[in-house]
Image 1 (tube, one colour):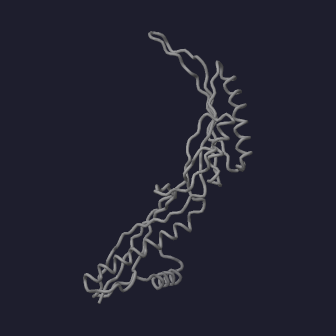
Image 2: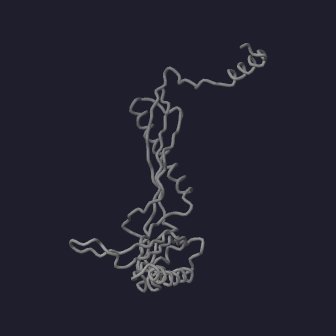
Image 3: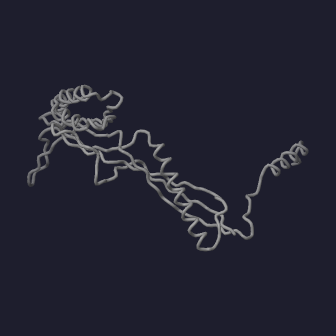
Length: 236
C-alpha cells in the first residue's frame, strides 16, 4: 500500500541517515592493543553485620514460642541499650519445628517443639562489636553468627581502584609500545567489568581489638576490586 505521506517519510529517512555516524577507523599505520587489568583499593571497615537469635525448646509449641518471645524481647532491649538504632535491627526469621524421637521399628513421635527467632544487626561503630556481642549473650541470645565487615559508602574506594587499574593499563601499553619501537597515541575504548563488593582482606597488622574486658574483635581491612579492558592505539 502506498503511503499517503511520501515526502515526510523521505525526510525522516534522510535525517536518520545524516544523524548516524560510522565509527572512526584507525589510521593505516596504527596498531591496536587491548589490555586487561584489575586493581584493588582497601580501607578499614566502617560497618559490620551480625545475626543473633534465641532458640528455645518446650513440650508444646505454644510454650516454646512464649519462652522464645520473652527471651528475644530482652535481646532486642539489650541491642537498643547498646546504641543500635531500630532501623539497623531487622527480623530475618521466626521458626517453629517439632522435635522427633526415633526408636527402632517404631514410627517417629513428636517429643517437643523448638522455636527460634533471629535478627540481622548492622553495627555502625565497629570498635564496639565486642561489647555488643557480650551484651547479646548476657541478655539471652544463644545463637550468633558473623561478623561480616564492610564499607557503608564504597563508591570513593571504587574510584581509587579504577584509577589504579587505568594507570596499570597505561604502563603495560607503554611497555608494549617501547618493545615495538612505537608510542601510545590514544585510548580507543575503556570497558569496566563487574566490580567486586567489599570483602574482608587479611592483613598481618589488623585493626586494634577491644580491651580484654569484652570479646576481642579484629576488623582488619575491607577491599574492593575493579576490572578494566582498555584498547590503546599505538603508532610511530
